Every structure is written in C-alpha cells, then in structure tokens.
Image (cartoon, rainbow, N blue to C red):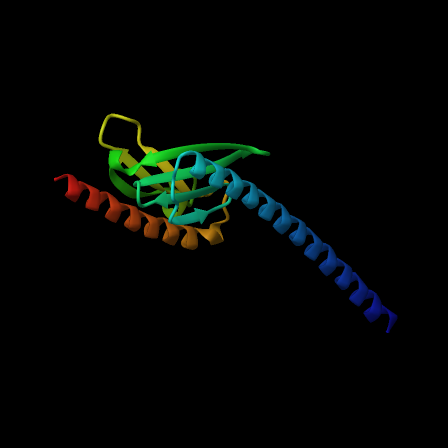
Length: 175
C-alpha cells in the first residue's frame, strides 16, 4: 500500500512541475505578445494607420490598413527590441505564397527520397520597381514546431488571398 502512495506522490509532483513549467512558458509568451502589441499600436499611430485586421505569430505581429493600402509588420529582435516595416501595397505587383521544401534521402544523398520536409512558408511581396522583394515568414522549421505547419500554412494562404484581392483591385483602379 505504501508503494502505491509513494508512486502517486511522485506522479503528482511530476505533474505539478510540468504544469509549473508550462505556466511559466505561457506567461513569458503573453508578455512577449503584449510588448509586440504595444510597439505595433505605437507605430500604427505614429504612421497614421488604421489597422483593420491583424495576425500575431511567435515573434511578429502584422496588420493591414485597407484604407491606405499598407501593411505594418513588427517583429522582436531581442528583449524589448523591435524592428518594423511598412509595405505600401500601391508599390506591390504580386503577393505569392512561397513554400520551400527539402528532400530527405534514405542513404545519404544517393538513396531514394523518403520524405519532403517543409523548411519555410512565407508570402513574397514583389514590387513594381527594382526593389528587393519583401518576405513575410509564417513558418520556419528551425524556430517553429512541425505540428504548427498546417495551421500556419492555412493562415499564409488566407492572407495571400486577401492581399492579392487588394492588389488586383488597386491595379484595376489604376487601369
């Protein structure tokens, strides 16, 4: 009987420790997201943007201002350090979904392909002039978990469709 009680106590302690680590991790993620939101809101106000729709991911927050056709992207670069970019959709000719994959071979590089791994899913904004395209990353295999891939890929597809409609409407209005 004492063995069962001891086992129950050990299991309870392990569950408590696991729960504690999860709670600490969740709290840190919420603090990080709150910092991103504050920075995002400050930049939106500073640049006179009216953000209609936003998306938050691990280290970045972005949103679209449909009235002025701009996208604001804010990402963390360290503790309390941020970088931002404003994409003017008037200067964008195409927004395409990019999915970079890598083949995994059975016997090194000469065997048959056993699986294909998604390395990155992103949106690529191509400009009307000769500027370097801007890449908005949704999934990166070295920072995100593989089980997040389907959800993040769906988000990227939805945003690509939404932004492409906005770009096509602008091109129609110009023509």
